[in-house]
Amino acid sequence: MIITIDGPVASGKSSVAQSLAKRLGYYYINSGLLFRAVAYLLTKKCLIPVEQLVTLTYGPLFKCLDLTKFCYVYVDGVAGVCYAGEELEPFLKTAEIDQAASLAGTNPELREIVLTIERQLAQEQNIVVDGRDTGSVVFPKADYKFYLTALPEVRSERWRNLQSKKGHDFTQEEALREIIKRDERDKTRLVAPLIVPEGAVTVDSSDMSIDEVVAYIEGFFRL
Image (cartoon, rainbow, N blue to C red):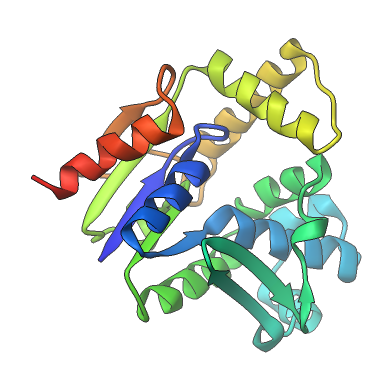
């Protein structure tokens, strides 16, 4: 079975997807983590300027990365990525990598690589996957599709709190501007823009906790 959860930044989709996967005993795929890992490797290991991630082509991409050394793992409810045996998660929590991953998501070649990884993982087990185009592009025939959203003011405060935990302080106004900018980029990009996938159930989590959202989604499986 394939369950997709799409939505804009800071909508809570990753937390909900991970919690749902754990409760169902499914394999969780964090597409955002995959994009951050690729963006980190390209910019920090290969020293490719961040602005070039938008136009990077297969030639320099595969010259830089050996995808046979790239792995995604999900063990005991925890997702992780590694490259050449090195765990990458400690390096993926900065605002800089968040920005690089967002830009990488607009590149069709980079998206194709992440899409291929996701589809390969889905061949092996039941999955819950979250992202911005998992129900519209990656798995258009998913068994269940959900679109998780929340008011911009709510999402900006969530994003601000998350960045604070990472040691990055933003004012409420700065956080809201960042959320609005990310929303505009995700919705207007030429490749796989953020949309409500066909057949998806929209869930507004503005006034809901993670557990409440998960319980609501689980209700669809008992119908």
